[in-house]
Image 1 (cartoon, one colour):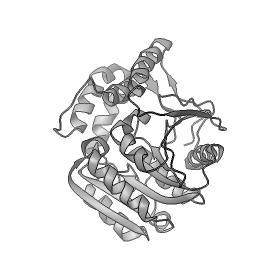
Image 2 (cartoon, one colour; image 1 turned 120 degrees about the horizontal axis):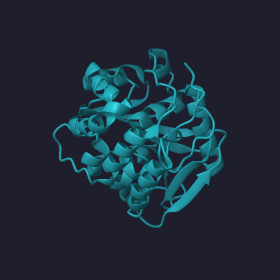
Image 3 (tube, one colour; image 1 turned 30 degrees about the horizontal axis):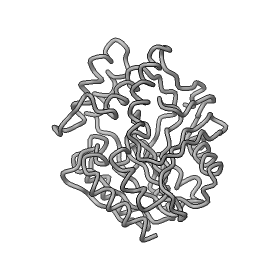
Length: 293
């Protein structure tokens, strides 16, 4: 069912607390950084630009609630070789501000297409992690004209359904009376036993988003076989073997079976936090794929 609302922080104080964490985190972005606030029909989109390469840029779409800060382990290495744009997704906490309802998957593609057009990006290597992976695949399905390649990094609700174990842990994080305890517990569980630092900026931002921001976005749905078969651009798929967002083997096999021009890889030891956990390996693999195209 289409939504008619827009995302918002629950109180001005909650937004100020989030902004304090965010402002401190972006100080760690590699210099020089160019900041753009791109006007779209759904609200202004914050975009950070890095690097000076004149070839088609890498465009990064982050996971739920993480903002562009999620890419801190990746930006410097990527920007050494290519122009990079990191977007704060509309409808989440961050510096993008949703002003109009995003009703469906077509609207999700529309605001991203407007952003790329206003940036003057005629050709791009689109990269998404988690829900950003869903957005990237959605764009490849609905508006592929300016895409040179597509990279899906453990994409949520894209290749396989969410497991019941994840849904059961997510639900308490959305209920105000249980969220205060459920959100930290969910964050620890999602790390799959890997080192977990509550003071990490990305962890703090995701926690603040889940606790204090009210999302008003359409629920993403898994892409059909025909939609995946219609993805017409070279695609790299990296699946975390210890992912929480899907059955890794099913996601990997479905990518291999359906996406025509795909390089699909299952990384057995990686968790859903693969972009940070395996940053050096992800950076090298992504750059190698981009250079091929």
